[in-house]
Length: 215
Image 1 (cartoon, rainbow, N blue to C red):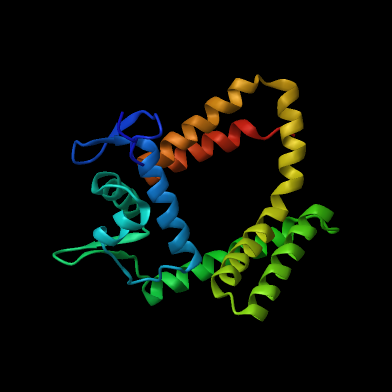
Image 2 (tube, rainbow, N blue to C red):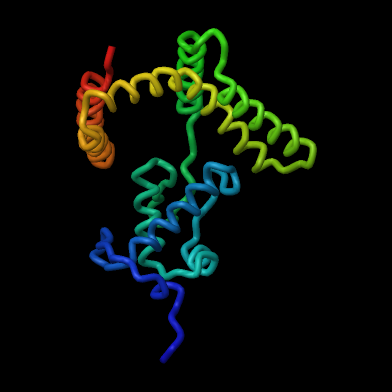
């Protein structure tokens, strides 16, 4: 019996790609996760070309799942398709950068304003952990680890404002609603996000928020 290849070793359900090719879902997900991680960490920088031959060798997969992964990453705005030039990591314009930093400032200011006066010890420990990772990475010159810790520090800062609300509200929701109700509401929100239709997402968010807060 011939040895199983890397693409057939894991029994998974296939999915139909944009080109009508059936490939194991896990292979597409693996390629998406690997490339997304490398883009967000800075291992791949804006403008870097993504060459199929190189990536298929690195990931040990064929072109079908890789192309589907690149298509999904394109929908997420992480890669760009260039006519006759292939695929590259998406580049941000100065306006894009300015808008993103403006959004981050708004989120962080709002988070600090509504967070409890005395920070939750666990949330504070998370911030301290990210800061220590940054410090060690800076000392050793590990720029990718430092960038990832930097990103996670700011995510943790915004999350501080949500912890008290989420904990209290989830306890109250568990008392008055069926567990399946929460699953259904989050499924609707997920489905809306998956469509890429902003208006559907707004509608789902409005419905989700109105139905999930308990005073």
